Length: 362
Image 1: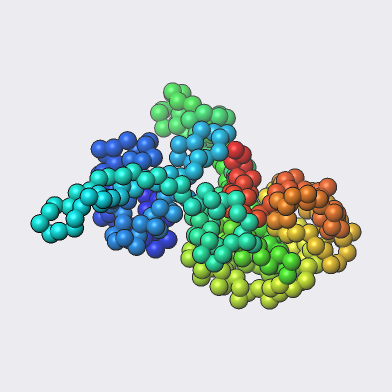
Image 2: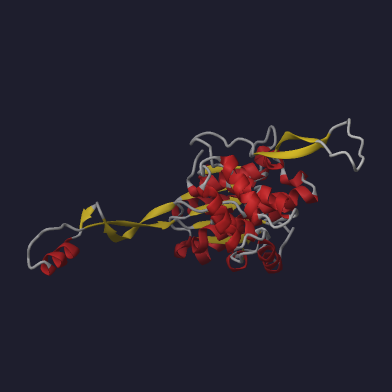
């Protein structure tokens, strides 16, 4: 059902009747077999030939980890097509029956090729495909233990419920009731640098923020930083990625401007972080660290943030370049206060970032 929703979100015609047909087909197949699931969905959820490329992309993105053992990297998605090939001896006359044979052609999915490509070097068609894969990415957050309790079959003894149960049974103690802490999604705050030096990556990182907001719901907050701090949470909660990006673009007044990370981080902590948004949260800063302001101020605010947050993650697209060293003043000032230092330059790097947010380490 989740895959059908993903296909509909990508523009496919996966109506309830087609979904039921896929489920009936899977009743006769092995649902743990990747090939069986692929063909059951392809033969039932696709309405016309234009749906086939869309189906392949969504299937590769949604079921990429279906048969992967924990701790191992998912293999390339392989799609098998049966293509009729006309025999060279055919004359082409209408009286002769055309002979053909089935040739199995295995082609590695283009998704695997694009996973490690730097998004700044992609063409328009490749970037559009990566954007579609980011839109269906699972960037849900990890959970944390709440102070509140809920009924549970095991855990701490619940005196109140035990006594009430005893009174209902006339004073006879027959059942002990237990309770345990509830779990809640941990808050995630994303600060995306939209300055000029980050312009090749800003759109992709904002699309990742949209995927995180879609996956994490109200537990996710998104801001853009540059010369001004802009809250983008409401715009990026829209279900459609293109509509969300259009709203975010209209809300950001400082696209491709300068960078004042120290001042913007101070404003965030003064207005939002100190009041509770950053307390116990996973804070992700996506920036190359080019600070035009006071690097000392950035270091002070990063130290302040690290005391409030559960974890501080910094995604720098330049980190993936051979020979990179964090020598810029801003990056050097922030580095001692970072828990995880990663890159955000490719689809694979964004998948790693999603695992860091959800604490789903490979």
